[in-house]
Image 1 (tube, rainbow, N blue to C red):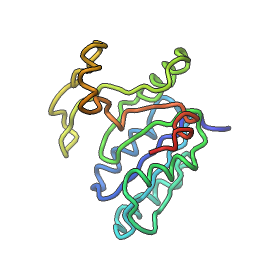
Image 2 (image 1 turned 60 degrees about the vertical axis):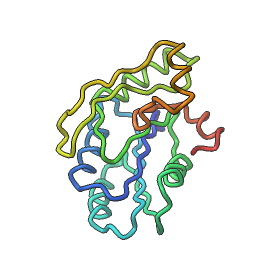
Image 3 (image 1 turned 120 degrees about the horizontal axis):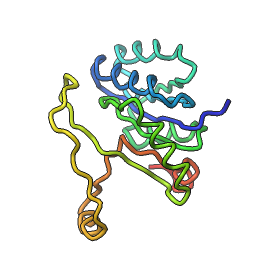
Image 4 (image 1 turned 180 degrees about the horizontal axis):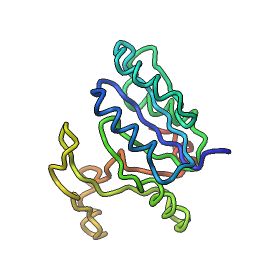
Length: 173
């Protein structure tokens, strides 16, 4: 069965604990129809490579090992190129997703067909996965949003889910 959501992630120099918690938070999602494409962008870090290989036994996981360090954008583009899901969800190798994240995002996009992308609020955590700031406020006022976006993005990148065909049509990152 073709996955409905492709989760893409690149790792470089995260700790084993960070990477394991991040991967486990995706593999334990309530939404199960996924493929999880993980790009290892640090060919010299054998510790991370060995950890990733252990996750390769899960049929939802697709591992990509870069021969040289390509950087985040190019590594994510490699994942996008091999993704097969209707939607692409971003994940960072040092972040944790709540267990309902993918389900809620998928259901929202499916019931709001005019919407091409969603992103979530976030809690900031420290290196021990302890919350240090809860639910950073999202701007919902159109007027304030237009002012803020002149200076940068307010989107938490590793919380994005977007229509795959749109992201591919735009050329990825």
